[in-house]
Amino acid sequence: MSAHESLEIELKFDVDAGLPAPDLAGLVPDGRVGEPATYLLEATYYDTADTVLARNRTTLRRRTGGTDGGWHLKRPSTTKAARREMSVSFDDAPADDGVPTVLRDQIASIVRLGELVPVATITTDRTVTSVFDAEGRELAVFCEDLVSAESLLPGGEVTRWAEWEFELVHGDGALLKRAKAFLREAGARKASSVSKLARAIGSTPTDVERRAAGKKSTALELVLFDLAAHRDALVAYDPLAREDAPDAVHQMRVAARKLRSVLTSYPLVIAPEQTRPIADELKLLGEVLGDARDLEVALETNELMLAREHAPGDLVGVLIEGERIRHERALKSMRFALSTERYLALLDDLDHLVDAPTPGPDADSPAREVAAEAIAASYRRLKKAQRNLRDYDAWSPDWVEQLHTIRKRAKATRYTAESADSLRRSSFAEIGAFAKAVQTQLGVFNDTAVNRARLAEVAERTPLSPAAMFVLGRIDAREEARGRKAVKAYRKL
Image (tube, rainbow, N blue to C red):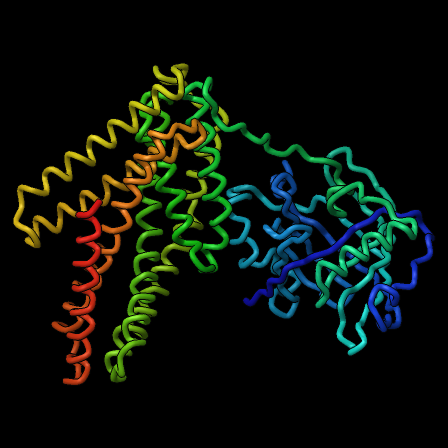
């Protein structure tokens, strides 16, 4: 099943029914407008009974009529005045098969185990006019809509209204700005709702924005602010990770790790019996995401290394095609894990933790004091691991393993320090910056160690041509040099 995703950038206005549309040709120098086309659009909108999609500014509909009949999922975007739209045509999703799986996966982290049911039906009598530039390129479409909507929620009503939409096709922000002023002058008003569905079912409650912890905040307020932020990041990256968007798996794993770090760094702020099971589940989630992420990094590294060589085909097959297959398998396993009831229950438990925590002994203590103790404890563990490195011979297996321990301790210290960013203490920031620098350099060394182990495995287990073995040796030498350079940079810290 295939889906098409695009960025919808549009303006929406309320208008009086029957208000004549202005001539839009004047928006573009030497521009023109096409012949108006009229369509009857009939849509059914789906959500849970408690409208969790609407609360997350997300809409899911099945629509017939017009030029894009099918299923449409619309979500917020980081681009101003824009929304992300994913669509599946009826050719790819037969009408009687229900919500397409590809769209269900995209909203799984929001809907979870909730049942999707029709919440509104909306019929739109739409007249569409295209705006072209002097070269005949379509810049935008202007829609005059007469809307009739029926809410299917308890106590729902039928409402009718008229609105205008101006959506960019190949136009730019300057055209959008001109169109806004032009249409307002013609009698259009600011839209009373962000979407037709919002107007049909009425306003829905949204999550209250949490205030960042300050000088007088309690430890519980600090922890809850951090947990909410990382929970939101985890949920936001979930659909992107499923489709293997750039850096999405990595960022989702970071969010899971930071959540676990907050829980383990402040063990007495929230009751352990509430946090411990969640921390254990987050550890498992991090491992699942880590498998996919590590193979993603390995594949990218192999591509960069071979780009500098005239590598024979058998080596390319092992280091590129073979790793790509392993990566795809890891992604498949990750997607399965993200679709299990266990993972969805973890998201529910995180919500409950943020909304209804069981206070621990340190809950009402000043945030600065509790954070200072947590950061200091983590920093002491890092320094102890660094001192213990002296007990091993340089470049011995035990010495290399201790560098790995130092890297993990540095990451823990960094995350703990960053959890107190909102307190704005320079000493916390300095420790976090130092830990980040250690983690970065030893992370490079760890990557090279992992890569070299994989190269050695390939050399031992895979029949390769002499030319391939020669190139493999060159790559191994470069990785060894890169690792030694990273260790040297670490020692300077």
